[in-house]
Image 1 (cartoon, rainbow, N blue to C red):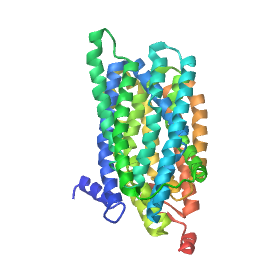
Image 2: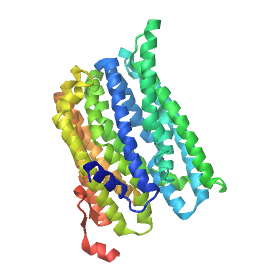
Image 3: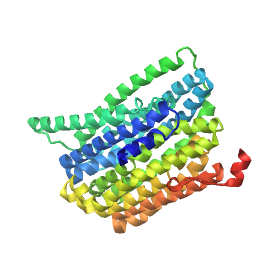
Image 4: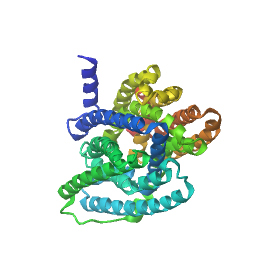
Length: 456
């Protein structure tokens, strides 16, 4: 059996019984492989077309959109995966129907309000240089679509429609960004207009809108099949209280992921952002296995915990962590050894970010070695522990970026991100061990025997 066949077999057996979750994990990984390639191609294309300065503007404005998507999602996206899976297991179709409907309406109202406020502030505060002000306002138009998309993906995961819940954004959106960008690049010179960050932002918005429309139709079809006969019931106060810890968790995760880009733009300039962003793209390539497994595994973890199947929960955690580590290690080593070759694809000027890429790659390898600790806590009802751990590391990330960016530039930003990644994973692994009685560093399961035996 070849290495590829063993890898496929390990993933296919990750979740045990034959069915939607198992196949969802496999197809999610394969889809994310393709999506990662498309995302990489998109980044290379835009970096080539826009150059360091224009690409920096594009990356900076969408980093802000990703940050603002967290408070506007209200934590409902993460809560929805767990609640939909639990409602389905209990046959509570009315509550499920009402939860999905109320969640979407609440998130839509929040995202529209935040987008309008941020656009007004950005228009006053940001300089018009390189189209930064206009690109920022245009990017914010995609904020409601982005937040509603995260909610729709979460609902589809809860329904175990894992693949159909993701392909519009993972596959269709990057293809459309490439197509719309190339179309604008060829057509605009005929009208005496250059292709710049503003037009790239418009291309991304159009692609987001089309992908959102396709995904919304898929969710409507699933809801009709699952909940058509059940009148919706709503408990908005209780749901909002449960969602708030997830909002904090999501905010801290994204803050950890985007603080470096945002603070580079604020403490240095958008040229530094443009130089640094390809290094972050390399680090994201390393993390795609972790994201794919977590996406498919989360509803299963919630179900196993709710059903009291502790042994199966521990086994699934150990297998997933082992798989993630083994798949991530060669990717990280490749970025360390061939980082210059990778960055040269974006343009020769981007090779200056090689050291930053090495630092970020080390951080992602640490992230993979601890596996699904955050998802495990969230899906077993200990999301407040996750919020505390990630909140502390996000605070550390901000402080380190403020200290390290002025003297070290993009390398300081990379070091701050890697250190905060190490911090949150260490804290999350500690909380998993205390709450659930085990952890699975590198896929090696360690149990607290006394507690484990008493709970059984």
